[in-house]
Structure formats: structure tokens, C-alpha cells
Length: 289
Image 1 (spheres, rainbow, N blue to C red):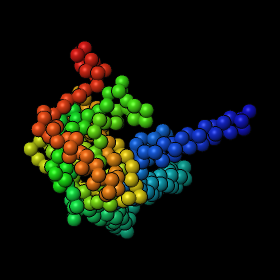
Image 2: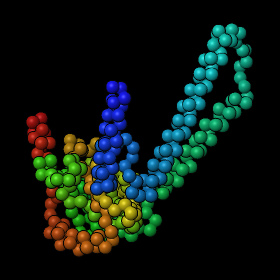
Image 3: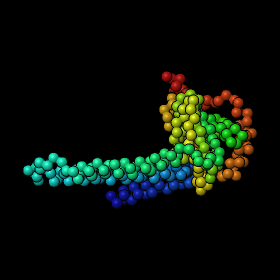
Image 4: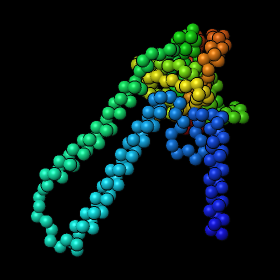
């Protein structure tokens, strides 16, 4: 009976993994069942962030194991039963040097790649295009500065209007479309309060601040064309949870075709007042308050 239960457990675990892998093939940058690690890295910045995370993790593991072993050694070696006559030594120069120098070396090991990564993710060196992102309560606006200057609003699709394959609380009416193999400068600001434009697979998590423009960048290789999702990661108000981000990464040729269509589609909306769409169930809960 025990063996059968273990076989059933392994079967369920394998099935869950297979389902997650199948979903991963359709959409690259979306949350998956049983997910516990980072999403698939789609940019050099996110790859470096994962590498740095793993470095810090193993440094912490070594420190914890070392301190634990040291504590066990002290308890066993220097308890009253094993060592009835305690030492009268007050200090040890060699040990004092070691426990001073060793933490300094650990901090250097952490600081050097940390600073390198901070400078690497700060600004685009040779941007090929610029996307301006403006946050509102509670939706996003995007402007394609180098492609005719057209722009559009991006709002959450209410749960009642979701189509098959669309993700609850993540899909939007107008997705951002960006070309692969292109170094893209991201300029971010806000119209009202502080928000945060965060897409984990891109390694981007940056505040949008009223009256200020923050900058970062991204570049997705052609091998990772797909759809990526993110959310506002700053507590910006009652509808903070309803500000999703959806980005389609396409080939450069497909992007140019989309730009020509988007110029016509969003031409009449450029001067229109921003849309403010809120989920029906969320609005009703607000009214009830």
C-alpha cells in the first residue's frame, strides 16, 4: 500500500510538471503551476540577475553551514562535562584577524558583481528604439516615440470578457508589441502616484514617479519570441492588483507590419481622454464601502 501511494504521488508530480511544461511552450513569460523559481529569463539583465541570486544563495548556504558546524563543535568540545576546567585565555590574534578579514572578503565577492550588474541594467548603451511608459490609476499608457509617436492605453480585461486562452488578471485589451533582437530604451513616468512597471522575465522592475522620468532597457533575442506578463509592483491604490502588463515580442518584420496597422488603429485615440476601465466586481466592492 505504501509503495502504491508513492507511485501515485510521483505520477501526480510528473503530470503537474508535464502540464507546466506544456503551458510554458505556449506562453513564455507567464506564471506556471507549481512554480517556485524565477520565470524564464528573456534578457541579458534577467540572466545576470538569476546568476547573482544563485551566487548570494550559495554564499548564504556556506555561511549557515559553517556557523552551524562551529556551534556544534563548541557545544560538544567545550561543555562543562567534556571540559570541566575552562581556559583562561582572553583572546587569540590569529582568530581575530580571520573573523575580520573573512567577512570583508565575502562582502567584496558580493559587492563587485552587484555594482557591475547595477551599472549594466541602468541605461541602454546603443538604443535602437524608445518606448515611453506612463502609469495612471489604474492602467498603463504606451507611446512609440521612434515610430510615429502614436500611443494607446492598456487596460485589464474584466474576467467576464475573457476569451479562451486569456489569463485572468494578466491579459489586457491592448498589448505592448516590441521587436526581438532590438535594444530598447524604456522611459517611465507617472501621471498621478508612484507605480512600478515590472516584468520579471525582462529583469525590469522600475518605479514610475510623477514629474520624473526613470530609464532602463531590455533586449530579447529572437529565440525567445513570445508573450510576457507582468504587473504593477508598487502599492498605488485600491485597484493596485488590476494593472497588468502584457508584452508580445515579435520579429522585426512582424513589428514593422504591426506599426503600420497601429498608426491607423490608434491615430484617433492619441488625442482622446485616457480610458479608465475597472473590473465590474472591483467597482461594486468599492461602491459597497
